Length: 142
Image 1 (cartoon, rainbow, N blue to C red):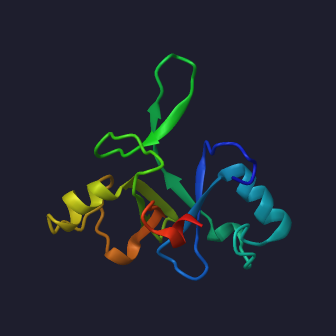
Image 2 (cartoon, rainbow, N blue to C red; image 1 turned 180 degrees about the horizontal axis):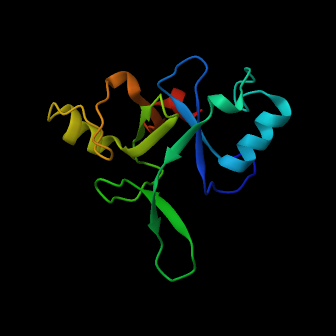
């Protein structure tokens, strides 16, 4: 994270070489960086505020009442961990992406031959899927 703190309002920057991969940042830290430098904080490529994509993510409240939280798949209600495969389905027109587990996408979309976003019901194609985390893909983990 640019601010070295966990993100509370996640935003996505698509990879410069591969648009099917993205990096998550906190909205305010990223916007401040882009307004000041007009560059992608990872690749150094030119970046404008209009290139940023809002991520719709589901919070998983932590027990204990301390107000801490994590993130979870809104379809399976499984908390994301360092070992989760996480994807987002883009709506390019609205510059928003809905985050879910790859397990939900695989089982309820691909295997069921159902190409409707499980969260919004809108149709999508495989080109609209962006990988956010895959612990088995070393290139994505760098």
